[in-house]
Image 1 (cartoon, rainbow, N blue to C red):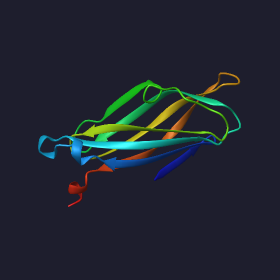
Image 2 (cartoon, rainbow, N blue to C red; image 1 turned 120 degrees about the vertical axis):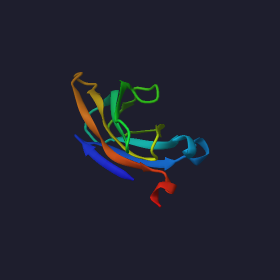
Image 3 (cartoon, rainbow, N blue to C red; image 1 turned 90 degrees about the horizontal axis):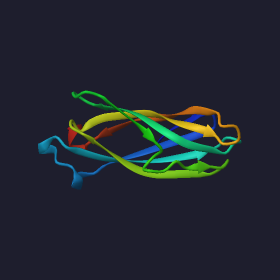
Image 4 (cartoon, one colour; image 1 turned 180 degrees about the vertical axis):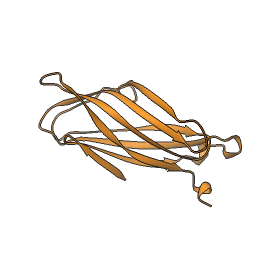
Length: 128
């Protein structure tokens, strides 16, 4: 598990290769990632947006940006956590992702970015 803390908000990531959804002969490798967001700050916060940079070895990188995560804009009271699972397709079987969440302090509407730690995705057969 990879973890990073920004302004009291802890973001942890775990990845898993999904062989049953992948087709290496067609350059299609599927990974899932589980993210846990823990509000260690003193304020109630809401996740408004996400921004990802996705790097696929030997292929062009791409950026993905949008509202919330998996259709939600969770509100976290101090001490609360939110967990979700999403996925990423790679052509090479080797890549990484890194990004940020745009959070809002509910009490005053101020916004701030929270770092999502960089994590790798490597299909097991690519390790040989």
